[in-house]
Length: 121
Image 1: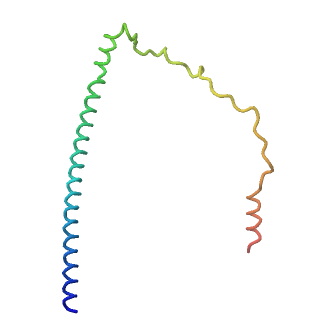
Image 2: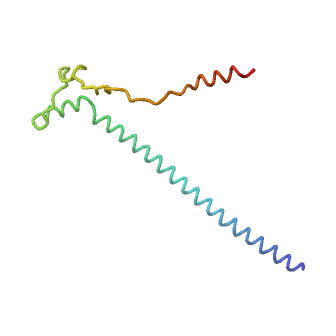
């Protein structure tokens, strides 16, 4: 009986060692993946901030004004003037409905509640 117990203990010990070995390497792989993802996120954030800076640089009002002047013949862009905007009186609002729809008999819920409350002592 003792040799069987020793063999069984050795098998359990070896299986636990194998499990710990696999878990160790799985943990190291997960840590490498997290490190790689963190590095990629940092790289993407840096690229995004660079693209925002480039967008702000390309949308400078002075640069856009110069581009409008250079491409006036093909685009025909003009500065905006107050006369180009419409007045409030020119806005076509929707007309109100001609008649309200008929409703059924109204339910007096407040009266029922107040009558019941008066009956209670």
